[in-house]
Every structure is written in structure tokens, then in C-alpha cells.
Amino acid sequence: MIDEAGRLVKAPFNINVKNQETITMLEKWLSDPNYNAVLLRDMEQSNAPVAQTITEASARFQLGLVLLEAGKKQEAMAEWRKALTLDPQNWIIHKQIWAVEHPDKFYKGDVDYGWQKAQLEAETSKQ
Image 1: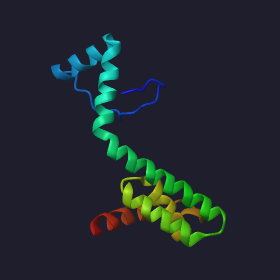
Image 2 (image 1 turned 90 degrees about the vertical axis):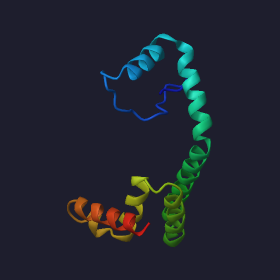
Image 3 (image 1 turned 30 degrees about the vertical axis):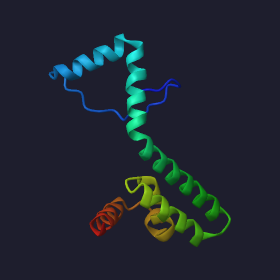
Image 4 (image 1 turned 120 degrees about the horizontal axis):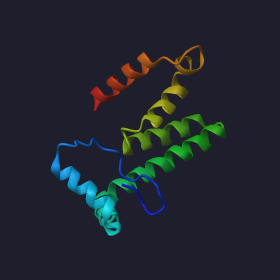
């Protein structure tokens, strides 16, 4: 779904052209200019707490970048860990933490994507 500013606010989803319910929804979305507003309103109401959490995670991530730039590595790491607790699926936060903790996996030669995958699996199994 797209908001009034043209921003994508709902991730793309699979479309099955054989599913009549999906086709009906898309036809209505394309033909009725008010339908998008209804969908956005419903989505905003159901996602309000999630959006607030994601916003806080983003703010903590940005604060961590500022702290790191100021030479306050430990404080930055603490903010990123709080951000990751709020948004555990955020790949950028994971990678930022890993890059600071393990620069050899990111800045010496090729990025070690296999190591990143193993790290993510290890962290996920701890939860």
C-alpha cells in the first residue's frame, strides 16, 4: 500500500492471479480512490504500537551512530543492542553491531556472508 506522499507503507506481498479474493481487492484498490485511504487507516490502527517500536529502534540506531562517531563505542553498542531488542529482524542493526565487534569479517578482504549467516542463526537460537 502507498500513502499520500507516495511512500510504500506495506511491504509487497505475493499475488496469486488465480485467487479471486486477491483480484477483487486489487481491482477495488485501482478503481476506488477512497479504498486506499480505508486500507491505510485500518493498517495504521492495527500497526500503531509496532510502528512506535520501530521508530524507537531507528532512533536508538541513529543515536548509536552519533555516539560511535564521538568515540563512545560502548555507549553506541548499548544503544544498538536496545534497538535490536525492539526490532530483532532489523538486518542493518545486526550488521552494524557485528561490523564494530568483528571488523575483520567486514573490512579485510571480502565480506564474510557465511559468517554473518552463522551469527544470525546463533543469535536466533538463543532467543
